Length: 112
Length: 118
Image 1 (cartoon, one colour):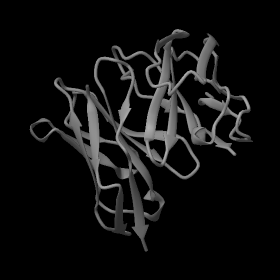
Image 2 (image 1 turned 135 degrees about the horizontal axis):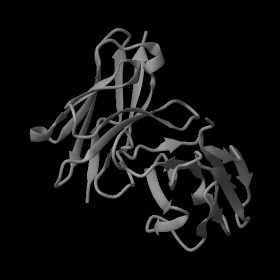
Image 3 (image 1 turned 90 degrees about the horizontal axis):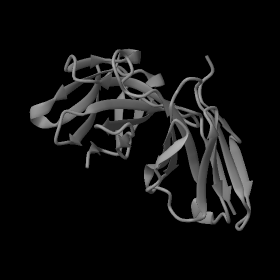
Image 4 (image 1 turned 180 degrees about the vertical axis):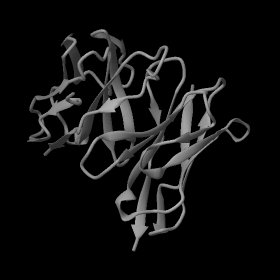
């Protein structure tokens, strides 16, 4: 069965610094991959998605992710962190079936 | 267009009471999902429907949980009787079937129903 592993349950960066959130997937065939963001007391919002088109995917709020089949990774990056980026981030995978399987989440803290 | 609407946003109840959570999916979406979020277990898929028919309920924790979707615009998740370990945030999400064009199956989430069972 497909799954995702997010490395690091908590990441802390300074404002203006690079954000890197790691996600590795397990799938026997090319999957659909997603990053979602959850702000406090809210539902999840889609940041970006990989659907086997371009391997570098650009999302909202300056985030992007690169699909690397050789590494089975789909890490999320942003060149310069902003205070408003503080939230919890979830990587998710789906293959075949419509349902998404989510990782455990990474809480991003931005230090002033 | 309105997003996924869930009610109530907050529910506090006592152990043994029945709890009903409600969800209105985005109009036109043909998939509906119920997820539960806790600190310990993260996001767990409980059940999902396609065209109002339950497809996979393997995530429903036990017989105390039941879900229905009587029509395309309404679903309920019921817990009877409730227990303190059911305390969590319950999310409803909807999506369009993955297919040609832009429909890639991404989920659109409601804001969640926070349940506290005392």
